[in-house]
Amino acid sequence: MTGTRRVTNLALLVSVGLVLSIIESTFPPLLPVPGAKLGLANIATVIALYLFGAGMALEVTILRSLIGGLLRGSVVGLFLSFSGGLVSTLVMIAIFALFDGTFSVIGVSVTGAVTFNVVQLLAAYLLVRNAALFYYLPYLILIAVPTGLFVGFASRRVTLSLEGLSLQSR
Amino acid sequence: MSHFTRGRKAPGWIKAGDVVLVLLVLAAAGVSMFMVSRANASEKGSLAVIEVNGHEAMRIALGSGQPDRKFLIHGFTGVNTVEVKDGRLRISNADCRDKVCIGMGWIDSPGKTIVCLPHRVVIRVTGKRGGKGKVDTVTE
Image 1 (cartoon, each protein chain N blue to C red):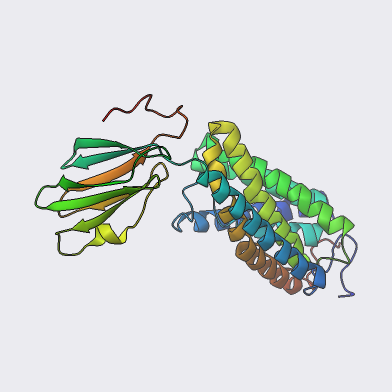
Image 2 (image 1 turned 180 degrees about the horizontal axis):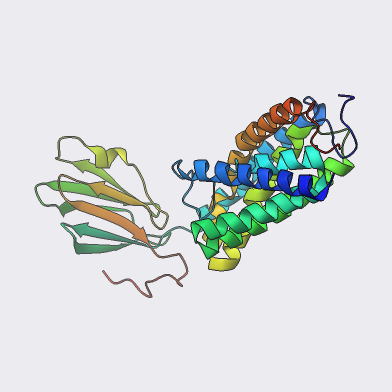
């Protein structure tokens, strides 16, 4: 993949992630926890992981949480989504690379969703130091299942549709 | 999926591992819910504040050592009967029309409230057992 192609693909995926998080921010919040959300933007990371590999997935996650945080103008939100996104992407890469035979994209994205929510809660705890926050842990884990499944199926659909496209040849 | 070239990977269809993973996650949610509810049960409120029309009318000590009792609260337009038992509190009777406050049942943990809107009565549980809450002592 040439440099230009790579940059273009990266920019496309980051934009997809940003648009998804903007769409998601119009939904009413699921829980009164700062940063608790569906995680639709994770679709961009999962697609990047399956189409281009681990490096692209990490770049997409880092860029979209940094740019998204700047767009929203919230430092706390940036800290939460950056830490959650980074750790969950690393965990997804590990599952993707090490347990290929055991899990499909569904398992990878559910793992990512759970990690994202749990790490965000831990990051929020570091900020406010109030153990009452862990009251939300069960609900955050529970919510991660439907969102992880949705992200997994959506990413699978997109990845299969792009199968025939020459994204990286030439 | 043989067209997937170098760097690409087929997303695959659902595998048994995915199902096991989802079940494990659901189990983790259940276990954490159990642990959180147990941690909360040991942290009951020690004080209930009763407000009538926005003004504090009464403070009641809850907690294990307190005697069971029943008393009347004279609200804005009517009377509510408050019952305290086993460190919990409820409105057991009210002469309002809708009886929503009775339906709110027992409360005992900090932050829980019972509201009787027609009588403008609000009962709120605060503080933690064993001190360190906002209240040092309770006098009645």
